[in-house]
Amino acid sequence: MPELPEVETVRTGLERLIVGRTIAHVSSDTPKSFPNASAEVSQFLVGAQVSDVRRRAKVLLIDLSSGHTLVTHLKMTGQLVYRGEQSFGAGHPTDSLVGELPDKSTRVIIEFVDGSHLYFNDQRKFGWMKLYPTLEVPNIDFMRRVGPEPLDDNFTASAFAERFQRRKNTSLKAALLDQTVVAGVGNIYADEALWGAKIHPTCLVKNLSSTQLELLFAELQFVLRLSIEKGGSTDRNYVNAEGKRGSYIDFARVFRREGQACPRCGSTIIKTRVAGRGTHTCPVCQPGQQLKAL
Image (cartoon, rainbow, N blue to C red; front, side, top):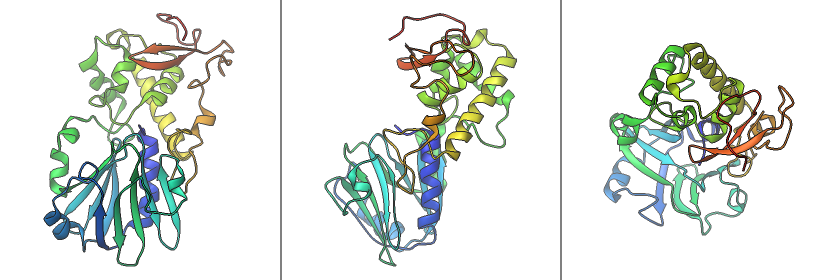
């Protein structure tokens, strides 16, 4: 599943491509991918102009002049492919990004007045595009539960530490992956931030000092911003709006580096399992409970 930087990369690309365009027609092949009543589509989607493309956690929000928002989740294999005077793709890297569309993976087709198209492709049919009144989007169950954006200008180190107190008896990695604590952080960035802060992922939240949590906050913001700059991280699953795989993974310090030398101390990076996820650590830089390497 895409993490915050991957979705942000998709958002910035689509913002350049579709804002200001007016929707002429919409079709879909399955209600699972496009669970919207035809009357609402006719009234609030067709004829509306795209006014903005936003992101909340790992979800894309395509705002419309009709006062509605197309809430979009790419899940594991979703793509958003724009075809017009220019062709751009974003999402799971299959031939659909560059091939003729629609194809067998196309679930939703949005045609704009100028003849350009936005295709939502999804091989496994886990993703979806759902229309909501824009004012109701913050009240969607997911939106009510999800934590603050880690890169929000108003989100401080002290607020970050306070959020983790709700998970004080769990491991720090489990807390980082909990979307109700902080939004959009997945496995890659949890490992990278913990390595940067020299904290072992099995450490309980309650055993960390405020200084350690502040350092972790700074490291998390650093790796997220760097990944956005590099176009996302997931070289296997997600590409950016120009059809290019993200390059952050090439700059990762610990993730997928098991068996290699730690760039800080030279010790051998190991891979274990923490919070149900493959976890990469340096046994010297991140002292703590040492688990058997995978």
